[in-house]
Length: 89
Image (cartoon, rainbow, N blue to C red; front, side, top):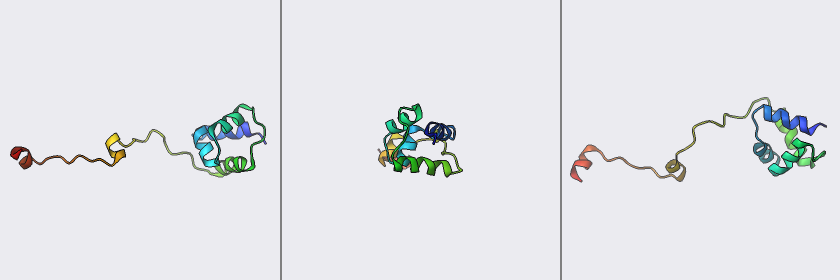
């Protein structure tokens, strides 16, 4: 199999090497080695994960979706004072 071409196809669909590795249960460097031809044959689980991703018809969700703010990520929400509370303070 041409693993280099399979990874290029996945990247054309919008996957990053990190996302491919996470789906396959391996490290990003393993995917990089396959993509560059340094590794010719992956482990069975890695190859099966790549083939599974190739079978999916959908593309990866847009990575540019708005991220949570620093406070939202921590679960911290600031309650604004009402005008009555502001006058009393």
